[in-house]
Amino acid sequence: MKMLVVYDSFFGNTATIAKLIAESMGTADEVKAVRVVDLRPEHLDNLELLVVGSPTRSWRPSASVMIFVQDLKRSQLEKLYVTTFDTRIDLNTIKSKFTRSLIGRGGYAAKKILKKMVKKGGKPIVEPMGFLVDGTEGPLHEGEKNHAMNWGKKIREAYDTKP
Image 1 (cartoon, rainbow, N blue to C red):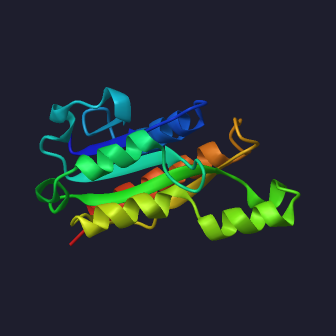
Image 2 (cartoon, rainbow, N blue to C red; image 1 turned 120 degrees about the horizontal axis):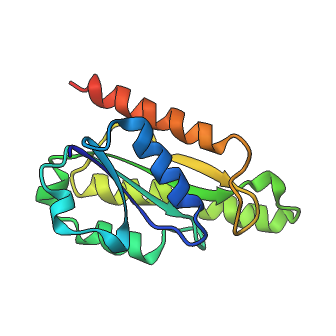
């Protein structure tokens, strides 16, 4: 296995996105999607590309994802191409201008995860991505499953053409 998608999920939406990304990146021998609580040290052996995903909770990634990223060693990340994704509520569906403003300023999980991974030496391969969820528990917004598969293909193309 060369590629790994690590994710956390509360209502199943982020898990669905993670599995679709992994599926579109390559064969089961090349890439796996693993929930962060099920991750074992051997999942990180011989890894070349790491994708990390989390639902956005209070403007940040889940605690489990942040602990995973914090526990990664610089020596592990310096060898890896990395990118991140999150699931989030569509700002356009929130009626309160104040709440939209708070969320707009607070940000989303994906950029925060990527920033920590790059700071520790990870090499970004594609820009982080957000996937929309209807309401706080879902379901996924229409078209997001295709969006996830297309983004996974983009990651694979970038990986195949890396310098």
